[in-house]
Image 1 (cartoon, rainbow, N blue to C red):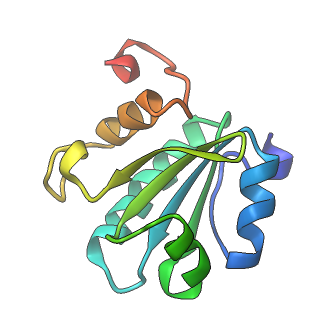
Image 2 (image 1 turned 120 degrees about the horizontal axis):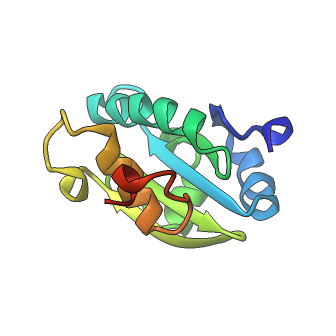
Length: 129
């Protein structure tokens, strides 16, 4: 998995989106805007989670540079995290409400939510919740 980008969190461009999502079993895509503070918070958590969960590919996509997929996937608020399984959008996290509602939520909240979304395997009881 590491050879195809698992264990990292990288920015992709719109033309890379479909090949990555359709050729990888589990993918988490964070749609972001470079000036939004909450998107930077998502990035911080994703950087931590991706190193622990190599079963999933983690990428970020600039919403301003991906109008086709923003429209196609109905992204209306940032940050939005969409979980893909076998090329199909299976679940999404919009904003921070499900993660604790505040900017300083712990990383474990996002990890557990991604586990519930079916794209990560729980590594221990803490992650399982």
